Image (cartoon, rainbow, N blue to C red):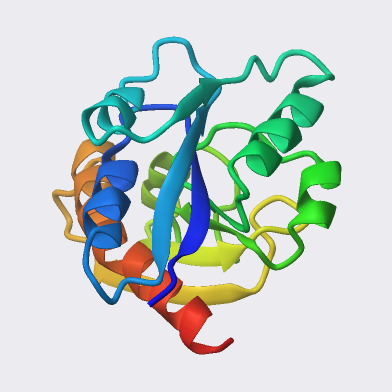
Length: 187
């Protein structure tokens, strides 16, 4: 099986990156992670790239030229698929257009509800009965692309922002690989 060369974009702890790396080492998983791009100097997740000997690149996204730097890296490693995993920056349209329907993201809510940040606090404030995560294609609108996989759970009366984050992340570790398999089984 020829695996699709993939780049994962991260900004934080990298727990979804670690999960995707482990999945990508399975024989029948459709992607191989060939590059990790991160935009936060204090990003702990880059340590997983180091541990598993995956090339990584810091890109300072505060500068306009950063999109060209990202495109250069993607070309250098012959990347044809991108996974956003806790990447806290909007992807420039130049990259979205070049990788149309080849960028996916995982979001910690049941989209189209609670796009953007602070999802857990908003879910609790609105007294939702259920929450979860959504894997979707990335387009030029925030958290708006076609949905690939959704997973949900019921909220308990004693749940907090911290417990919702924990439960949602555990769902994400199942949802993201499932979505990737689904994407490539449809090709």
